Image 1 (spheres, rainbow, N blue to C red):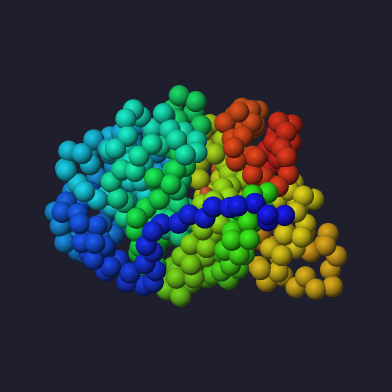
Image 2: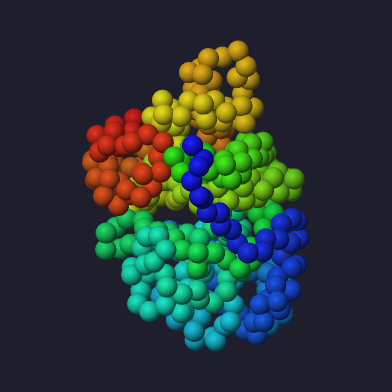
Length: 384
Ligand SMILES: [Fe+2]
């Protein structure tokens, strides 16, 4: 074990801490950009965050605020046209994963022919595009430091990903003050997305000595701070801790990728309108219960990292405590516990299971336990 060469990737420069957005002007200067395009979504604009960021941009800038949640990939092509039309030399992605993914991919598409659908999968983008500065407004996706971008493919009605070193942002600015106004339900779902990244990366068969260390720290910090950030949004220490936890989770995720929780969530997201974080949060305890026999040592460690007193318990008990600790966290955060609670019709489950097997083989291959169609269907039934 651990005898293979592993790769580790992250954004080139990371600024972290309350007020870090003030570093934006320096970074634009360092990149030599004289015009900027800022990509965001209507919610971020309504929250007043666009003005807060614009104050720190010392060059002419145009704003594209049309990013939708769970964006379909044709939106990327519209954003690319916008970037080219305004002659931008740097692309700033401001928002959650959707805005940052659109910023990363549309910046790349300024230098690559064809359309996003030509590049699904790993390492298929030939060239790096315009530099990207990613500024997250949620502690969740880690898109700000990662080489991945995920979109809905309207043809196959599923979520698909592009993963390329050319998608790594040049700069990530993690300013927890930008997350103070995030409402509790979004704090919960995005924070659970980050926890899912940390746990899925931690237990992946591809985990390395490098990623295990960051995944563990991610799990511990999210366990320590997510309830507080949810309970009182203005708790700056908790918001800062969540950004750090999300950062460590993302460092593990970038190389190792996710597993069956994301596989099911992404398959569901293609068939039913549900946010990425919420779908992951809902599936996480069910998939952990399924996976547990494959990774009892690591789930026992998850239990300890989440503050469970595992001493004196057997491996079987301690690993089950890891699953239960995650389930209790979702309950404290008022995450819906069943698919029926969010309106998923039972008749849809066959299609979701089928789509998961067809479109999510890449992430299912990272799951600690092999998943058959019948098992995917059984997990969905359990979660329904
Ligand atoms: Fe995710």
